[in-house]
Image 1 (cartoon, rainbow, N blue to C red):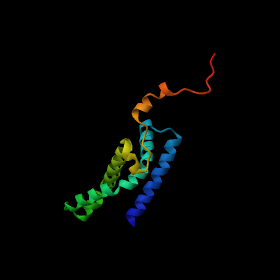
Image 2: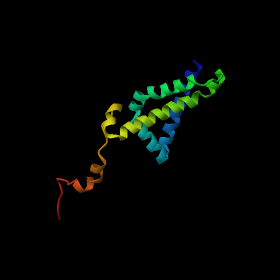
Image 3: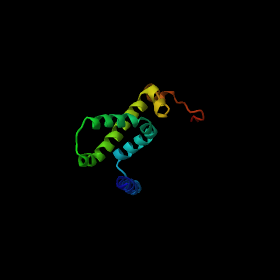
Image 4: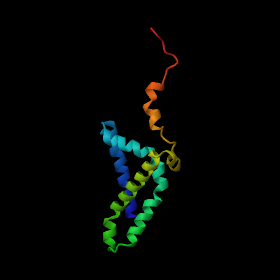
Length: 127
């Protein structure tokens, strides 16, 4: 119960801070990271069982006292989120696997590079 309250308050506080930062300018690196996370957020939800299973296995082979596990709880949470993000991002970038995380595959690199050469507007006026 205490952990739930702490996490709810933390997420609420983080959301308020993000809203403030968004209004007053946000670092382009952080903004790019947030946009990337938004692209694969459903994929993170879908693949989170993989890093949770890895964490369960890792915890089964460790011998720590209860307070040690309590202190390492944020580390485990961050590790699960980071691994799930990495798996989802990899699936998003690899053409056929994007469907596994609920996204359409991104355009092939060749199509993106040749966009300026192949695009011809239909309503072009000549002088």
